[in-house]
Image (cartoon, rainbow, N blue to C red; front, side, top):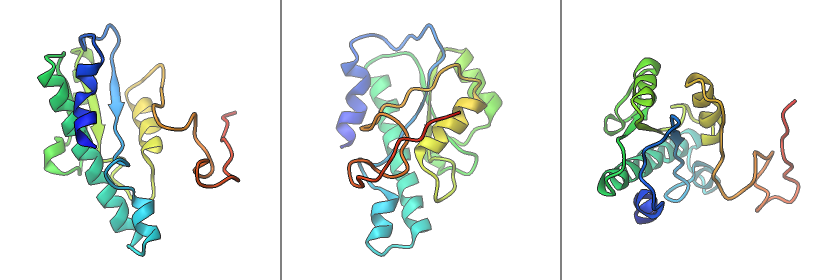
Length: 159
């Protein structure tokens, strides 16, 4: 699980020296999914907090992989109340890292249970004045339910 996350920068084959400013919101589903825990009887909020910790683990692995591959600087950051290993930060500091051509890695979701990392990605994209938002998951968009598990899941469209 984590070795593949930390190997991503090394596998890319090109230095992380972005001409553009890059921010990444990492998920934690490869380690733990809050909804799965809740489905097995866990308190939903507790399960979601565990999922947030899983995102911190992946962010640390990705940052470590970038450093080990001698790519450009990468900073892992979380929401202001994030676990201390995720360096709580504020928007001006994040914008400074982006302007310095560091890849900013967001962890710990929104800090609130009941919200997905898709929500976090949209919020952080707005907060960081992003021109584009790319979703790199196993589905091609945002759905009303997981289309792999629920055949009634339909794609949500904007506008």
